Length: 87
Image (tube, rainbow, N blue to C red; front, side):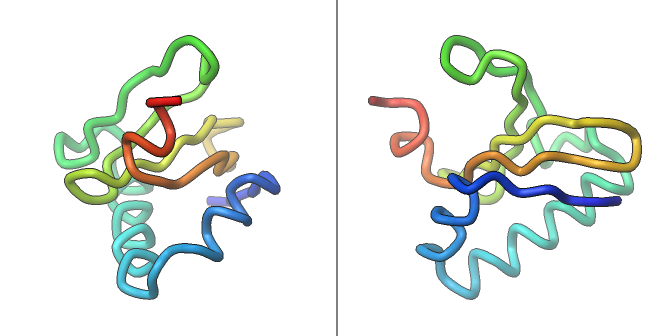
């Protein structure tokens, strides 16, 4: 799968720990195998993220993305639930 990244995602990514990055890669591997695996809690978003989806990285960390095709995905943001949704 091809992963494209927004500038917002790149900024977010620079701020996260190495362990969290590894966890994100693990979740993306699960996503590639089964994008609706229950551990991911893959769901649609609304309001400012209309058209995007979210998966769980950890209990509080989320990855906001848009699936472009079966072979590509746009990584839009990564952050805690409150960082992304409580503005």
